[in-house]
Length: 326
Image (tube, rainbow, N blue to C red; front, side, top):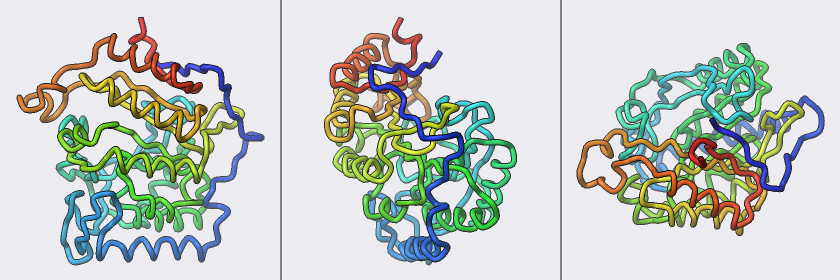
């Protein structure tokens, strides 16, 4: 069973029940300008930390293995997210196909690596967001959004014109570029990076993401600058802020400690952190000997050590897997 462990910082509550999403405060012209600038980047793509420089408008593909066409694998009210996102009616997730990382342990490799999905336009993504709102979802949760940022910003612009009024969640792997994140300021309400590694060598080996740890520190700093610590409405639903996920990996306790230390010392001890225990070898990590180091689940001791470290560095808002602590 998952739980929220308040280690002393309390819950930051936004005033009232109705909270205005960030993008409602932007002018239509500003949203259009953001969208246009991001679309221009497809021609010499630097949307993520790979900075491939390929011309995706001409059909070239980079690390994300896709041109300037966006695809969605599925969208639905998701009840497997954190309580503050799923609430009683679900988090309105829109799963984008492909990914700007290539994790050998990915549990969704069919969509993230093999591009299973339907090609969509920004207008179609906008209609998906509105459909999720009509189902009562508490937010619009873009999953693996980085490489399709132009489509998504344009979709938000269109959806707002048609009545969208939900917080936007940017559910990413953390392999971002601060310059691109800056274009999202005032559009994204909740940044939710899954910070996978505090070690560049491991990130290169297992996620094919060179310089990951160096990059994610800068990206986290920019996210926190924009939205601050996570806040909730009177019903306990996230309205805005930074939510950091970290999946504890076998044989990489020190990497996890490095992530938590950075968050506490360089961002805020009130950063909401979900320390996840559910790692299971999937995809290549399940069968290939060269990934033997991560070819098992984590131990109780590994997980307990990481959670204890979160307390030691002063983090006060940590979500843990209670069963793993027994």
